[in-house]
Length: 285
Image 1 (cartoon, rainbow, N blue to C red):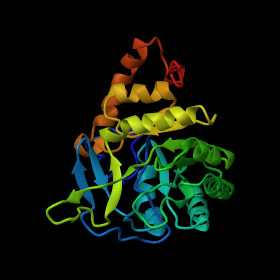
Image 2: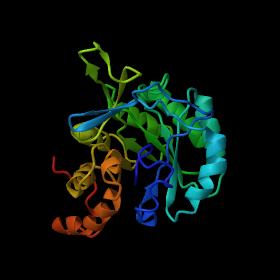
Image 3: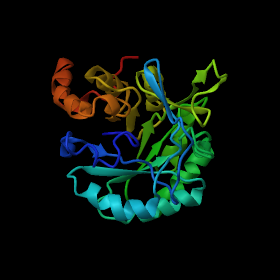
Image 4: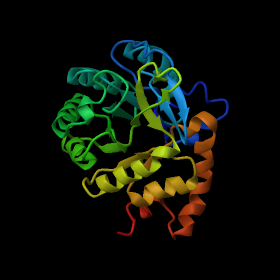
């Protein structure tokens, strides 16, 4: 899959990526009302990673349903819609409105955006996570994916909350909270101060989270965080992920996802597998 926020609304990529080959497209996270996002700078490159504080800049659910979803639904692959809310009711209303539309394969609840006010509250407490997932689950029949933050002490407890709330899968992980500093000006480089770190630098953290959650829940795990090579993909699969999302790598190699699809059969064959399912959660303890 391609991670939310890194593939636009697919229009930008359709000319260079064979989109129907992808497992799913996740367009940019949408909110109930339009958001202008954070002040610049919004991105800063770091060693082996990227800090971002976009602030969920989007046109709102009405514009998405009218202008973007019809196009996405005609691409020939699954569409997983990422939604974020300030309140539990926001998530419920978004899940209901999005879930009733044709062409939506699943809804990803962004419970973990680190650079908006209220953006990680639901993802840092197991009971709150369970409550919002259960409320969204009751509002729609389409599969619900819970995207979790690594910025917690016990991510396995949060994942259990999501599973108990009825999530069909958990997505691990969202970005890691970080800061970049201009020492000459003695101020943060991001307009928001702090932002979310993504890219290769966070892959060990993401793998650790997948490993911990794989022992705590029975629902599928979608691995996210620093994936750019077939070795990265296989590491996530054997550790416990049933699927992966490619994020930051899309920025510097937009065709990375289809290249990894091409390389997957040979990698599976190396360990005597013919399907992805045969290698999921096979990490030797």
